[in-house]
Amino acid sequence: AILLRYLAGYAVANSVSDFGVSKGSCYKAIWETTEAIRLCRQLRFKFPKTEPELSAAADTFLKNGAKIKGVVGAIDGILIKIREPSRKDTLDQRSYHSGKGFFGLNVQAVVDGNKRVTYLSVQTPG
View (tube, rainbow, N blue to C red):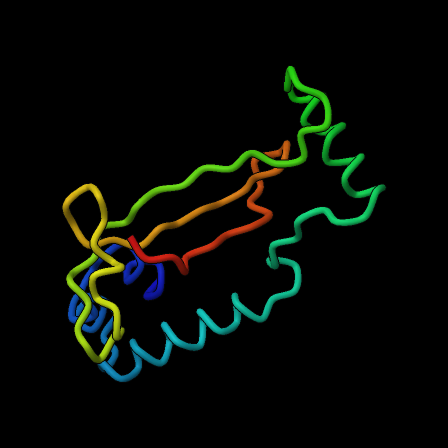
């Protein structure tokens, strides 16, 4: 619950008072839960690579209403607004300034025919 509230934008101080735990315990819970999710093999993204996997992925799209044969993923992206990065964060602050007039980080995702994420990238500046 602490991690979910933190990811939703709640301040750690709210969890301290609501759950009656220390600030350090909150950060420890956030870290340990995040690590457990990161290490869970069943939650890893898996983009199809072999011929049978690609064929199965394309079949799933067709079964779910795709009009084009051979589709194995649908991609979309968004530019997430961020604060201006400091020199400590990056040597190339200008690369994070987008054509939209603010600093940002590009997020791209691919989903399969069942709308499950198979690929995620959060590494390209604005």
